[in-house]
Image 1: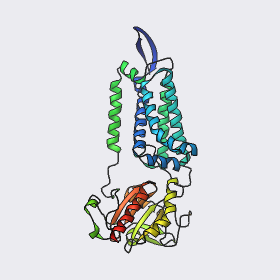
Image 2 (image 1 turned 45 degrees about the vertical axis):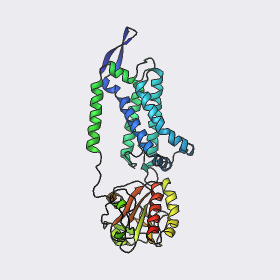
Image 3 (image 1 turned 90 degrees about the horizontal axis):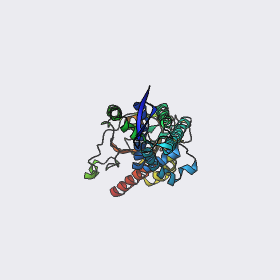
Image 4 (image 1 turned 90 degrees about the vertical axis):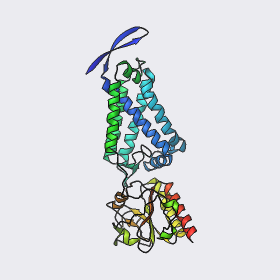
Amino acid sequence: MWAKRAIGARGAAYNRGVPTDALTIAPVVLAVVLVVSAVGKLRSPSRSAEAFRDLRVPAPLRHRAVVEALPWGELLLAVLLVSVGGLPGVLAAAAAVLLFASYLALVVRALGFEAPVDCACFGEFAPGRITRRTVVRNAWLLVLAVLSLVLADPADGISVLGRLSTAGAWPWLLAAAAAALTTWLVTAPAPDAGAPSAAPPASGPLGDPAAATDADDDYVRTRTPSLPVVLGDGTETDLRQLSTQRAQLLLFVSEGCGSCQDVIAAAPRWRTELPAVDVRLVVTVPPGEGALTSSEEPQSLHDPRQRLRDTFGFWGTPSALLLGADGLLAGGPVTGGEAVPEFVDEIRAQLGALA
């Protein structure tokens, strides 16, 4: 459906066939997505850097300057999409098409990697593993970008916001905002009361409740669940039984995760520095598959059905979780290439204080 709109310029009006006001909202929606993406990246720059590495972005584009500039570029693009018209508006829409086409290509390629990849497309917002749903989401964003380019007119100096205000389309815009807010309120996952909070290790990682301090009161030590896992030699056991004698530091990693490589490399050193704790690598492949399988103590743990991640409410790698020898969770989970080493440092410091 096409509508005729009269747009005045210095007192002279001309008629122009334009899409309905509802379609004009497309670049506004895209601009909101870009703002959310940028804010998420700015709030968690390390996670964005890890995502670049995990997605195997070409090395020149993984440079720190590029990673740090990307969210500011997204913010600038969001502003241009709705505030400029004419040729600058066309160029902004074309840039949006190129950007979202690149994002789509990256996630489609990541689905073919030998190991699952975690996406930080929105920084700390909406983290999670790349799936077909991620592809559908990015494809839809590309559609919005293409539609924004189609709507742009190099001969028209009116911005998107100008069109909306001239056409009296603000009710459409408010309706779209209300729909977005309602969708978020309905679909956003609520905090899982049964999962431990992502906190520093509680006092007494070796299972000594007397070591608790006031600083740890916010961390609720729940009972270690009796979840089935498989050791590197194929022996079946469960998480609670595993931690009945010694504290367990579980490092959730993946061979295909670029951010995990430093954690995997540091694991032998951490075993030496934490002699009272079993430091184990946890992977989602069966024993014998992949180079991370180890039948030497402390053996690797294998969770092909990903029960552990689902139970504790995290999906990113690398992640870490500390189980106390008293049958209670002692710290974590924490996620990220920087957060995991910091977590280990805190455990080391507490063990030193208890010695």
